[in-house]
Length: 164
Image 1 (cartoon, rainbow, N blue to C red):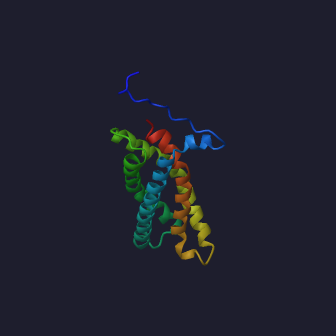
Image 2 (cartoon, rainbow, N blue to C red):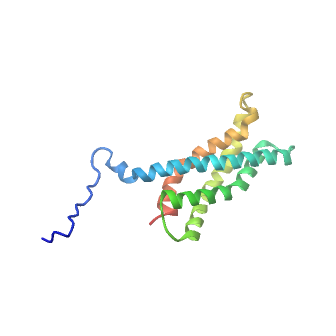
Image 3 (cartoon, rainbow, N blue to C red):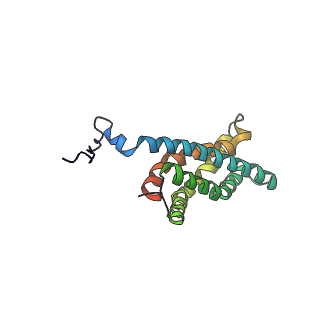
């Protein structure tokens, strides 16, 4: 045996009751996804809230559910682009394919747009029913929407946007 050749032992596959979960959720990748996702959510939500305020002043006679939808539609392309850059460089660490992966990110979030266009006005109307949440209705609806969308995006990005 050559003494200069290193002995490579294969990394054992995870086993035990949570083995399937460990294979589906690689630890480092999931932690990076959660960190980048949290910062993306904060950025996107701040952008959405700024748009709600802007459109609220621009169109004061229109209803808050409509303003929530318009704010979401106009802030979404910037939020998706920022999310794409974070996921590409810090989470999934892919190289090249910028346009292809960017368009796939838009596809992932595009699938959720019809759902958002229902969640936002419905949640806004529900929050308008309570005096305590009435002034913050479209903002609270945005938080509900963010939680729903974030819950499916990891798998969609892993399996579609940034698949290797």
